[in-house]
Image (cartoon, rainbow, N blue to C red; front, top):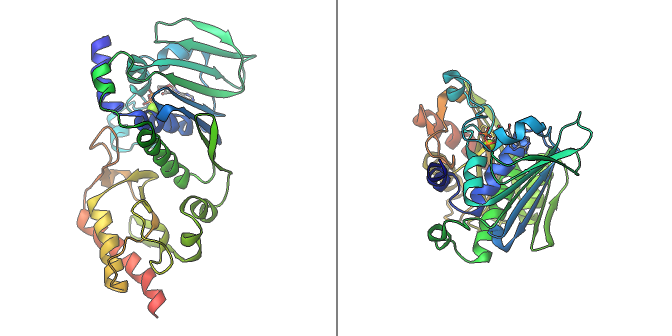
Amino acid sequence: DQLISQIAAGEVVERPSAVVKELLENALDAGATQITVRLEEGGVKRIAITDNGRGIAPEQLPLALARHATSKITSLHDLENVGTLGFRGEALASIASVAAVRITSRTPDAAHAFEIVGSHEGTVAPSSGAFGTTIDVQDLYFNTPARRKFLKSEQTEYGHCAEVVRRIALARPDVSFSLSHNGRTIDHWNVSEAAKRSAHILGSDFAEARLALDESAGPLHLHGYVGLPTASKARADGQFFYVNGRFVRDKVLVHAVRAAYQDVLHGDRFPSYVLSLDLDPALVDVNVHPSKIEVRFRDSRAVHQFVFHAVQRTLAQTSA
Ligand code: ADP
Ligand code: MG
């Protein structure tokens, strides 16, 4: 069982940033509006995420660390319509098989918090803590040195973690986030409007030269901002695309956006953009890879055309 967990962990927990992603998605699933991410040594030494969500009842704490026990999927229908962000029911169990995990949680009706340490076999003990949940992950890969060897420098691993936080924070301006590394607060984003959040995260260049976009066609809805290359510096990390709220990196979408930029502005620079495509979950498969960064559209031609034309029309306003 331990071995199976460690193998599964390889899929889910490729590096510290993958842990950050799973924990953030769980916090959002729990309805958190305030999330604190504390990292030490690029996340390898420690990833502690605190949220003010609905918490985990003491009798549920062992289940949270058990494989599959708490999958958010209850039917085949759910598989096709993954509404919540997490759905495999094994992220925490996998993480706990390759790191020292402590969960401290307090539900709204509990007189105090409870905690569990280690695995689903750990005992549940009273603890102190505010409403919500803290998941503290220490010494990642302490028992799988081969995997640990694949990690890059502390700064690189930290960079990946910070990128995951940025991606999620951009999509959820209705939630406040704070991020610290080695005891230093790096970022803090209060609850704000989408426009403000993206300006905050992508910088004033983007904020000053961008066009809002909001277009629908049939089951497809695209909204967000496209930056103008005149002002925004060419940065390779300013492209954010979300499908049904989930950050994705998809060839079809990237190509559609770049083609639209080329068509209107004839530039070959990397524009910044933050775009969200919402569509019927039945029209997109998000289950391509455990890291869920890839998607597959049922009709990728239609999606490409729609995105291309929406971005093209928006950018064309500048030359009109
Ligand atoms: P999944 O998210 O796929 O259900 P996970 O292993 O990520 O599986 O989490 C297991 C379970 O633990 C969740 O289903 C949820 O019930 C509980 N849980 C995890 N993190 C939190 C959190 N931050 N707040 C409340 N409940 C949580
Ligand atoms: Mg999860």
